[in-house]
Image (cartoon, rainbow, N blue to C red; front, side, top):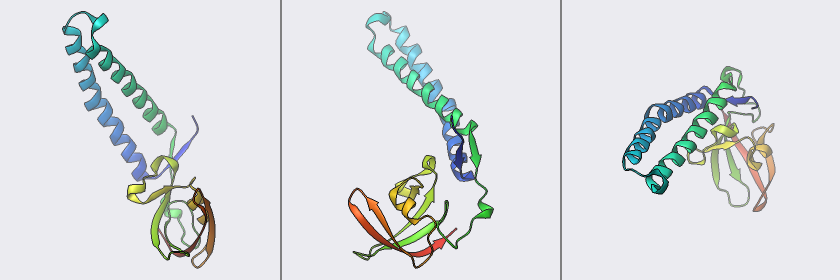
Length: 156
């Protein structure tokens, strides 16, 4: 697997999720398998089949997370600048057409979360903003068409 860049916060979230899966979910799945096994004939036991399937999916998720954190590199946030848009900046933009303003933090793909206004560096908006300065108007090609945004503020 390739190296994944993450913030310290993103890394800590992944580690917390991994611990929860291993220490809470895994024992719960094992209990469900034991209970289903105690009910007798496994060949016609839907509960057993469902619990085993859940176990397989859980183990795959745990392996994926372990691989992700094993190959993670923490981004040194002390080197961040605000003269132009870059990864980990919080950027306030204004839609030139409808005057709506939005603030997004540009993060790595593994940390994107729209509910937290964190957009992936791979999104059309982030790609369009990268390298531009406050006052610049950038054109972003999105599924809805070409949109123009003015960069109002760049923060850490």
